[in-house]
Amino acid sequence: MKKILISSALAIMLASSASADIVRVEMGVGAWMQTPSGTAEYNAGAGVQGTNKFDETEDTSPYVWMLIKHPIPIIPNIRLEYTSIHSTGESSGKWGSFAIPSTSKSTLDLKEYDIVPYYNILDNTFWLSVDIGVDIKIIDSDYKVDSIATFTGYNDTSTIAIPLGYLRARVQVPTTGLGVESDVKYITYNGSTVYDIRAKVDYTFDISPIIQPAIEVGYRTHKIKIDDSSYDVKSDITFSGFYTGIMLRF
Image (cartoon, rainbow, N blue to C red; front, side, top):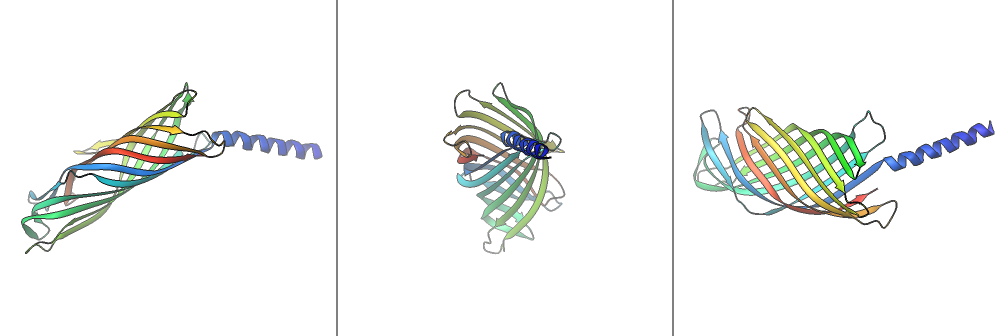
């Protein structure tokens, strides 16, 4: 019995050690210096009644992400992301029940939550990693047009969930802490298109076998084109710019 207990204990320790080599947690936080461009239109069933042009002014948007990779092949790994986006613009025409006498300032605030279950197709095979999965992008939007003269203002809030295809590729430069990575989220359907594309370079500091800090610098382009008659507001907006952040690898 003693031998059995010792053997069992050794087996558990070996299994735990093997799992520790496979289980990986990464997280990061940073700032995205994005510049919006494009338009939005208000349509209440009688053609385009109001238009909005977004200011092409850079704004700093915070982001947070985390991924968990585990050793169970049948269960997908998970990546979670959050981004807060703010932009301004000018609106004209008719929004809601009233027409804007000239133009009025507008603001758009987006909070995006990405839930990405994915499978690791290649895991640092010849220094190449490839992931494929689905991104459930939940967008909380708050659009406001300021009141002016006889126009009492307009406010629209909505939450939509959009499924996108997800593909990620990474190359780890041998014998260095340098990595090059890109990921794409994309869907197009019935005149609407949403994509979110990033490319980055990161560097991991190998100063601890348990927690490894890293930095990342990249470029991100995010397009939201919604042309759906079920929504009062249609959009064709692109947010683009460089981002930088810090990471931790466990």
